[in-house]
Length: 362
Figure 1 (cartoon, rainbow, N blue to C red):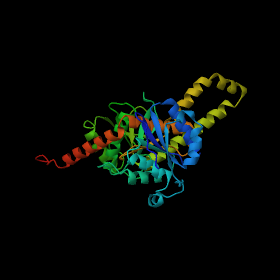
Figure 2: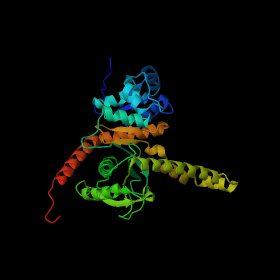
Figure 3: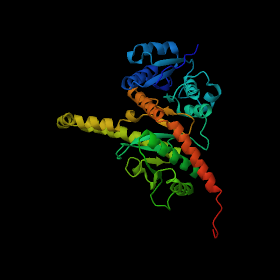
Figure 4: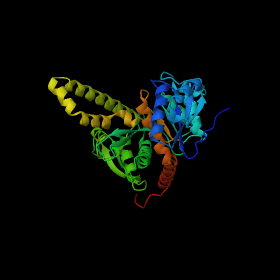
């Protein structure tokens, strides 16, 4: 008989224990870290039940806080999304999303195949009415007081027209408002320059549309921003298409890794530099924590009837815990419902605007 989550008063997160590079032991370690920090969280764990029960039994903090869903199949990183949609019903990823669809969990977390997760999420949870293309939003370390900027889309779809970019702006603003407590976030539209005459036609059209909706949607429009503004303080939300966004985050990850390697190499250069590294250990630890990608692990799928967080496939326990914390924060704030209301109201405003007759002389 299938267990039913009975965690009264707790936010329940549905977790895909399979699909990550490090296996289920790392996922269980991650949910244990979350449980240790947060007494108001519970879990539905999906994967081979016998194996998962043994791993959970070793974590006293998880006692009475995990419900299991036995799944025999796993979505691998090599599986094609179309194949998973057709024949993935017995997989842990499918089961994880199904628990959210049935209302048995408040959000889902998976370290698995991004394309398959998005395809299954759209099929099982469906897009919000009025949303053409869902987007993946991530947090990027920045100079802003909150420490991070939101950027979307970073890979859900390589294409985006002006209306899609407007929806990304609206969804990004809602995410910043509910996930980062920014009452009136600033939206920037990524371009090759800040001048209004620069960029492709769809960017210029999106610029006009986002500017028009800023007051109604309760955000400030910073206009066009450049790549150097992604970690800057000019905007809180950076809007772009999935192709550009994905290239940007991969470039950022590679650059951060290079800087870390060069810094370690520099401190090993001589006995004096090694001594300097010991004296600067506190500052270096603060820097490491500040730019540690594990601390902000998790891309949120926006535009769906439910909260789905994609954890990095190579995430360790700290990274998995961060993704779960993000899903918990959004679920606790009622983010999915607020986003649905925002998209619906804006779609109605756009429809009304489209039917307003032109003024005399126009």
